Length: 393
Image (cartoon, rainbow, N blue to C red):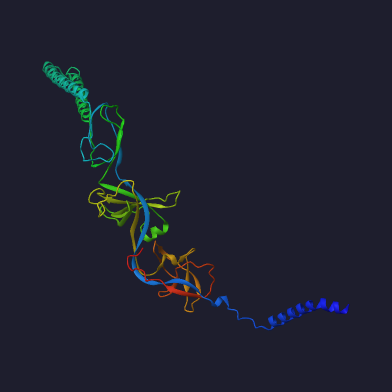
């Protein structure tokens, strides 16, 4: 019996001795040295703060629109007898060029009637003057003859009828001229609403056109952008002057650019957007003002705009990527530790930001994303390539 019990308990004893030995060995083994995570630097991209002299450029966008655009309407009624081949969508015309002709037979007749009516009134005036001369001679011996006796009211009436006839003749000539529809400026046709054979009344829309001498681009500006321009609300440039504006747009896979000028700022802040709008102009957009590749600055085109702003001297410049929300900048100090600084931003563009205070030239700022930044954390900076100088955005 005892022998059986010893035989059954032997395996349990062996297992227990093994576990005890493992526990003793594990407890006696020295623990590996733990590396302090604070001592492991995080690799970041950095750039050096530069002190530069530059001119700010304000970036915005807008839609091109014609400075002069209107709907052409008939001023007299009649059947359309001719339409210019250029009076079609996209067609161009010169100042004074006849675009539409109306049947003028009735207006020719009205002109002849007006001429005859004027001739009749002219004869009536001559007759009234002759009658007055006879009356004056007959009443030569009469003291203080009345105006009626001297035929003065008759003369006045005849002359009034003559004046009315002259006005009628002028109106007949004007109506006849209005059967040939033209415009006092060169332009392009945007839409056509009528054609040959159609009868139109006075006031009937015939189409829409716009002038090609100058186009406008309305540009939204924030308060910070106004500060970069250093222009007051309600600004008006002198004729032929204004801040230079560079426009650009990608058309059919090719980048085109045009030159214009900022000529005015609105006199009030938009109550909905809280923005101030500026108006830029480009002369001869379909002629001399076209891009280098010959592309016109077409009405309806959406363009990017860069407006020349105020100059800066010895301003601190950093990449735009280095500026964090709340105007914060991450600096790698001389001990390769993170410093979080608040800065005063003079201007922020697409590529760079210009700072006034909070940084020093030569310091390294973090330009890459940094997850869970902690003040004083260890960093290892890798310098980005030096960015361009002068005339920065």
